[in-house]
Length: 128
Image (tube, rainbow, N blue to C red; front, top):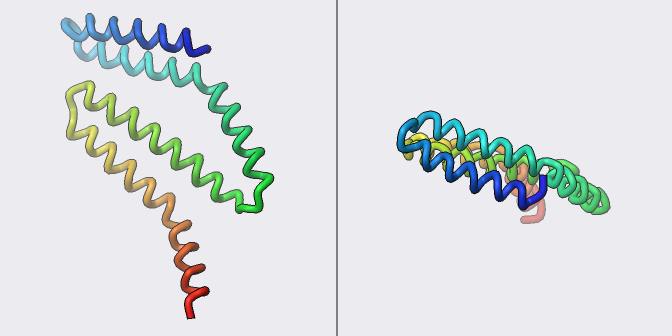
């Protein structure tokens, strides 16, 4: 799906959500989630192209493949956290949105922990 179609879908979905929210708030939230899912599915070919190009570029470097994997996972966690938080806040559940943010931060810290430990070991080996 190209950007024009995605933008039109999102604008139309937003207008419908705005109209529906006045009478059927739960259905408006479900419609919003459906529009988000459709927009993300439409962007998947582009995400695959970007990931393939980045993987090719990364394979030329002499860095460990685990770094690229961690980077991709961190980007995915950040995107999902943002979308989840925004959906919760749009539904009027700011506290749940904050919990989603906190969980996302915890997942990122857990994902980065092996890298931090590796860096700390390297620093300790260099220091006398």
